[in-house]
Image (cartoon, rainbow, N blue to C red; front, side, top):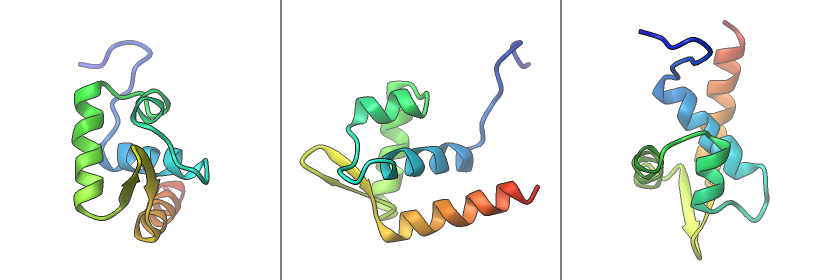
Length: 85
């Protein structure tokens, strides 16, 4: 059941949003900023950040998250697929 005004996002959409938000700033972003920008709860954010780190789509340096080149390519490719629909 969908609540009025809210929409459910699939996992790939959330992954693209996280990758895009950390790529907005050359110096990267911290967890709180990622959580707020991507509109995630703390458990969701932890789950996705861990997944993105394990798959080497993100890297973390001094508590700041940055996309890897692999992550940038994936975000770009998925975004172009979504735009074609």
